Amino acid sequence: MSDSQNDIRAYTLRLELVDEPGELLRSLRPIADNGGNLLSIFHERGNVTPRGHIPVEVDIEATPDRFEKIVDALHEAGINVVQAGTERYSEALTIVLSGHVIETDLSDTLERIQASANATVTDVSLSAPEGTADTSSARLQIAAESGATGTVLAGVREVADEKDLRLIEPLTTEGDR
Amino acid sequence: MRLAVIGAGAVGSSVVELAGEYGHDVTAFADSRSAAVDADGLDVDAVLDRKRTDGIVGDADPEDALSGPYDVLVEATPTTLGDAEPGMTHVEAALTRDRHVVLANKGPVAERYGDVRELEADSEGRVLFEATVGGAMPVLSTIADVGADHITAVRGVLNGTVNFVLSRMAAEGLDYEHVLAEAQDLGVAETDPSFDVEGTDTALKGVILANVLSEDREYTLDDAEVDGIVDIPGSVLELAREDGRTVRLIVEVREGEVRVGPRLVPENAALAPTGTYNTVQFETEHAGQLNVSGLGAGGPETASAILADVGRLDRS
Image (cartoon, rainbow over the protein chains, first blue to last red):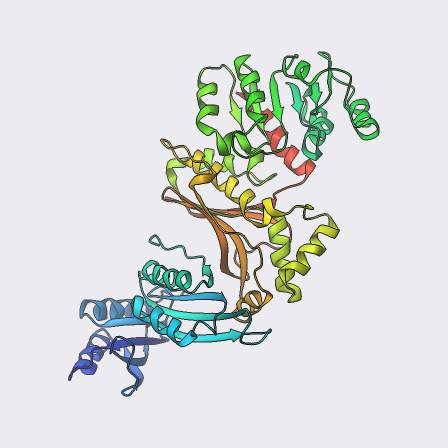
């Protein structure tokens, strides 16, 4: 049913572009060339990822098979696709850390997780029922490039070990870890 | 078949009670101190009664049961770590006499798998152990049917006590200590729950799975990476739930590794069974994912897996 040629759906593509002239246009061409209909572009010019890339969110309409071609074409063009509508193309990871999460410098923890692999922490939620000086927990959502889950988790494990935090990992079915 | 049942706990007693219904006779029954032996078949009600009232099963010596008349030895003594004794001695006694062995005791196949297979190779008897992983659930027989070569990974929630504690923590927003005390009151958790909550029991089952899946390598508990659920704060489950997830103690056997630890899973995932239910998920080469769920513990439930093994031996 969803594979029908005429079934046009909306997709969100989250890209990370190198900060160079012409990169945005270069990233939109594979979309147009493969029959995607651009709905909106959100170009976060001032917001640079820890690796110095610029996040761009592109909403498009396309049939599922065209969308697949678009993502392939973006990959072929060397454009970094962080998220592509469905989980198939990106790995959205959720982890929970518990222990002295706040006292061990949460900002530093987040920065190091992002720096350890091609990952972006997209959401943080804290629970500190006993106050910040006691055991607390933090849930992090991490967007990783497709196929990079294993590397990201390895980086998280290292930081958690060093800061003596307990890590609850997600159950991933990906091959590498 | 004529069965000798060694071990008179919940599982052993259930085997004795249900054997007749499955078409088998119990010709010997022993606990650690006593035994009842009768080549014509025991009076099941009488021996179970005696165990209940006097704490012994009969007037004979436990050794008499091992050397008595039987086709299949059912080993249902408690699992011990390290040398897997006295379970291992019982296995050896039966195989040396060319008798079959059906294990409920995880020790021999988790701690001394190589020795078990070596003894089996020299014997006319076979060793089956479906009951050691996932109680009533057909886990090992599924592996046998699909073929170990065609299974790329196995993941499972294999401890009812741990699962009960995590389910309650998530549902009631309570801390570990509180729920554990409740589980002990209900009789779901042992007075000393460390075997379960530290992940050892789950790891032993993972080691058995790894042994069955592997052709050329023997695994023991030392090969498993084990983390339990001790002292997980309630806030972890609360944060997980806000995101539609929960925490389960999962054993994963993949690429030669056995790993046990608390993992985040979607609340409605197959690997998030509630209460004392168990689930095993197989990743197969040609058939995608296969899930098996059911009661992973309990006397009659585990006895049904033992009697299924006896049935397999009977047909072979």
